[in-house]
Length: 201
Image (cartoon, rainbow, N blue to C red; front, side, top):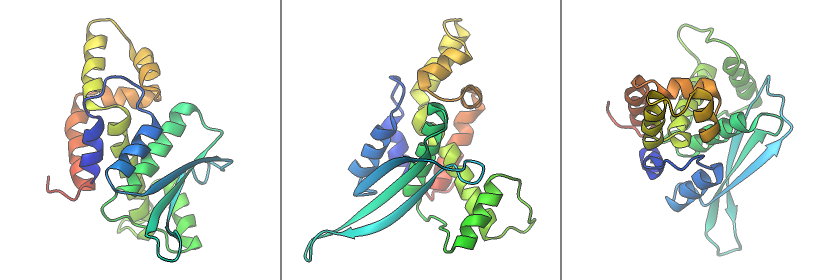
């Protein structure tokens, strides 16, 4: 599932990849029937984004519609909003998503996401936090596809662009672009895609 979504964009060099395009691709690939994106006033010290899924019944005899709502903070920069939305959209494609089953689990997750792991053996909140961080890195392959990364490396090498210009082109934070332009990223991202797709690596 995840690989199929990421491969939809891998030859793209016309950036930015819009969040609406990713949403539409998820629907076209049949992972979801309907996705709603909603900017909200969030306390980003606790939660930077979330998604909710449910089935809508359309009429007595209608087929249920598998729906997701992606919530992201309206006060963040456009670059960070794009990262947050893409990460939440990746969760929709997770083969098996670890979900919070109670308000306490949501609070535990929030604590884990804003700080380092505390339990050496891991617990439910650790697993959710790791899943969230993995989705964040996986989503970068959607927003800055391999063809665009190759072109960006060539432009920097030839002196035609610098990191700031590439970040503006992709509409991503410069710190993320620096990581993605490291050639080692291609191998690391392949492992993360394989994990997300349930493939051996």
